[in-house]
Structure formats: structure tokens, C-alpha cells
Length: 363
Ligand SMILES: Nc1ncnc2c1ncn2[C@@H]1O[C@H](COP(=O)(O)OP(=O)(O)OP(=O)(O)O)[C@@H](O)[C@H]1O
Ligand SMILES: [Mg+2]
Image (cartoon, rainbow, N blue to C red; front, side, top):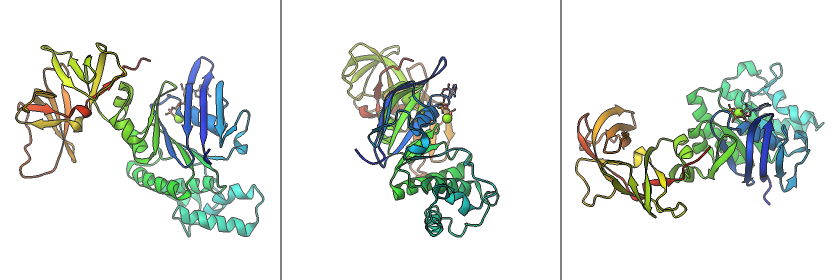
């Protein structure tokens, strides 16, 4: 057992008729940066509040550092929480805000001021001791809230959308700081967000939730490159979805007229002749002016639309498949780069390993 480990076994939480958390089992290791990601109302905050002891599960159990938490109140858990609205005391200074948790424990003054200095150093706000929260920027307030939550040296920090009040640029900067801070203190962070980019950038592992259930747990690369179902493939990034029938372990017959055969990542979990969905990321599709020599994964299409996204060029292409496909090409700006125009004929190609066969997720 690692210090800072969290285990949930078949946890369900009901509020009246609402099932906020539905049979969730999860193991988070000590020192992990672990995110709960999903749309509004999917049960992220409730799961976090159950870990923190602010809610008790209707069914199932929570273990922290190997100990069963049945009935253990929040202040008896080795955990602190940072909420979205920071909730700093407006009339206390930065130093007093940070020191609060230690003062409650009757720790000696010199020790408290050492700890406060160490915290200010950690959040890069040395010298800000006497400022009031009203004299701080949003990002600085957020950092003070973090310092205040870390001063008791919890083994686990819970963070519920802590950056959502910040504007985009500051949020990106704080994401980097937060990740660096977590590496420095080395404790478990459980981070709630509905922002997939944030979860990908920060996390060691992510749990994707919908309707109170965990649909997939994995590293950012696993979640992005090998989504297990359509919800995950759609919620994280963009995907083209092609419907068809699995005709061999790694071949799909698409529902087109005439039927088109494509190759995919081998998947022997799904029985043959089952209707499946294949997901292909827009940036994994290559646009060419000529077809490949073998006709595997090569669809002929006509460019319907072109948009300039900055780092990429986005094309919408109509093929024999009923729905148009979205394709992203790197905008290298090279002199030899051909920019397709509306009405051009183009050939869409991809490697079989970039065509992911998905279970159809039933809700
Ligand atoms: N105290 C409560 N009483 C009744 N229903 C609740 C309570 N807390 C949460 N719920 C319901 O449980 C479900 C999950 O809520 P939760 O707050 O965990 O979602 P969330 O994923 O954090 O959403 P958001 O991204 O909007 O914060 C929602 O349907 C919500 O309305
Ligand atoms: Mg929430």
C-alpha cells in the first residue's frame, strides 16, 4: 500500500431518485495526479465529496491509506480540499490565510511562520505576506488557496474545478504551475474537471465518467488513442465515426453503397458480424491527390469545405460514406504544401492502427 492511496469498491450514491454515483470502483495510487473527467451532472463532485467524507456512500466502501473510512468525518481524514471559489478570508492577510490551518492546531508561532515562508516559496509568492485577498489577481488567490490546503501536509489533495473561475490564458499558466507543484510535494491529487484539454495536460491517469458511471480509466494517451467506447472517443477530442459490421478480427465492412471494406486495429473482444463503430481522429487521416497502390483504408472524396485553424487546416470531405469526414492537416507553411480547395478530389488514407473499433456504449 502506498501513502496517499485511495480505493473505492462498488460505491453508489443516491439522492432520492437520482443515482449520482453508480457502482464506481477505483484505485488511485499514492502520488498520482488523477482526474475525474466528464460532463456536467455526471457525478464528479459527488465522487470527490465521498472521498473527502463530506458525503457517505449509499452502498460500497472507501479505503484511504488502507483503512476503511466508514463514518470517518472529513477532519479525521489525511485530506484537504480546494474548491472552485477559493473562499479566502477577506479580512485576513495572505500569511494569516495560509497559517489558519496550523493556528487551529495550536502550533508554536515561529514554526508557523517558517511553514508560511516555505509555502509562499512553493507558490512563488514570497513577500506577499501582508497583502489582502482583494489586492491579489485571480491566479494569485488560487495559489494562496492551494498553499492553505497544503500547509497541514495532507497526503491527499482534492481539487474541484479549481481553475474554472480564471480566464483561458491564466488557466493554462496555472495548469503548468499546478502540475509542477504536485511533482514537488509528491502527494496524491484528485482533480475534478469537465475540460478534457485540462485533464489530458495534467493527469497521470484519467477516469472518464458519464451518468454516474466510470466508462474508462487510463493514461491520457490510452484515453485518447484507444478509447473503449463511443462516448469516450467523442468527449475527448474529435473523432470521425464510421458505422459498419465487423467481418474479421481487423476488418470492417462499412455501411455504404457499394459496401467498402476497411482495416482496423485488431479487436477480438467483439464477436464477428456485430454492428460496430470505427473511430478515426481527424489528424490521423492523410489527404492525398492520388490513391494508394493497395486500396486498404483509402476513400475517394470531394472537398466540401476548408477552414484555417492556425496550427492546422481543417477539411470537410464527402466520400461514399453518407456523413462527411473531418480531416486535419498540419499547417507547415512549406512551399510544397498543397492546400486543397472546395471541389477538389482527394484521397483519404490512414494506417489501420488509427481506426479504432468501439463497443457501442448503451446507457
Ligand atoms: N445534495 C444533493 N441532493 C440531490 N441531488 C444531488 C445532490 N448533489 C448532487 N446531486 C445530483 O447528483 C448528480 C451528480 O452531481 P455532481 O455534483 O456530482 O455532478 P458533477 O459531475 O460534479 O457536475 P458539474 O460539472 O456540473 O459540477 C446530479 O444529477 C445532481 O443534480
Ligand atoms: Mg461538480
